[in-house]
Image 1 (cartoon, rainbow, N blue to C red):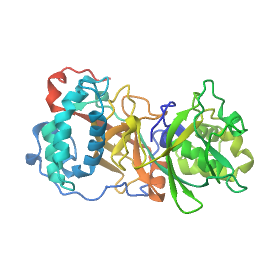
Image 2: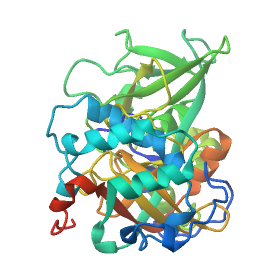
Image 3: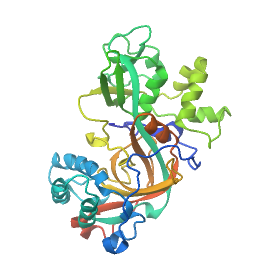
Image 4: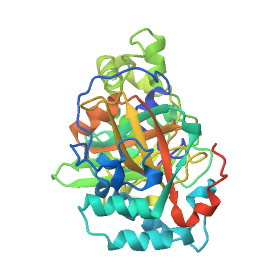
Length: 379
C-alpha cells in the first residue's frame, strides 16, 4: 500500500489510536495462514535457529512469495546498495545469490523453504530483545462510481502538483473542486476516511467491476488520531478502543462525524492500481499474514523477521511466524513496533481492527554478510 509515515500510510489501528497499547483482546478471527503446522524436532534445525521459539512449527513456504517480492526490488537496484541503515541486512550484492536460490524453490514445500532460510540467513537480535506493540491493517473495500451523483458524492482525489496543500477540513469543504483531480466518487465519507487510514484498497463500481487504489501522496499536515478525541470525551476506555469502535461512534454521531474526522488535518491522495494487490514501501506487493510495516529508522525494509506475539486476536491468543518488513506507517515508530497486513475481507478487517498484541522480532540477516554482523549495534 504505498504508504506513509505520515508521508506514507498511517497504518491500521495504531494510526487511529497511537495509544491504548497494552489492552488484551478476545480471539475473534483466524490470521491468514495460521493453521496447524508439522513439528520439526530441534535436532533438525540449524544451531543458530534453535533459539527462535516455534521456528520448527511454521510453514516457511508461506513466506516465500514475500521474499520473492523483496527480490523484485533487489533486482531493480544497483550493485552494492544497502537494504537499510542496519549493516547486518547486507547489500543488493549479498541478496542476489539468496534471490537466485529462492527462485529455484518449488512452491508449497515447507521443509525446503525452512532449509533455504537456515542456509542463507542468520538470526540477529533487534531492539535489545525487548517487547513492543504490534497492530494490524487490511485492504479496505468501498462502493463507488466514475461520476458524481446524489449517492456517490464523496471524491477520492489524485495528489495535486503543488506545494502547501490545504488541510483535510479545507479539502472536504471543496478546496480542490473544479481542478479535475477526482479519481472517482464513493458513497460514504467515513469509508473514505478509513481508506486513508489503511492507505490502499479497492472500490466496487456500479457495473460490478473493481478498481484498485494505492497511496498517491499526502498533504504534508501532521496526523492526529481521532480515537484520542473519543477517549477524551469519555465515550470509550483504552481497553475498549478499536477501529470498529471508532467507525461505530462516527456512524452513531452523524452530526459530529465530519468535524471529528477533520480534527485530523492529514489527508491522503490515491492513484489507480493497474495490477496486483495492495503494495507497501518500495512498491512491494503485500502478502497477507506475512508482510509487516516497521519503522525504517530501526528495521531495514525487505528483511525477514521472526515475529513472536501474544494477546493477538487469533485462536490461542498468539503466534510465532516468519514475516518480511515490507511497509511503513505514520504510527509505526520505535525499535520494536510493527503493523501486520491481514489481507482483504470482513475477517481481515475484524482481526486487524482489534489487534493490539505484545511481542518481539528477530531479524534474519544474510549469512553471506555475516562477517558484518558480529558487532553490529542494535538501535
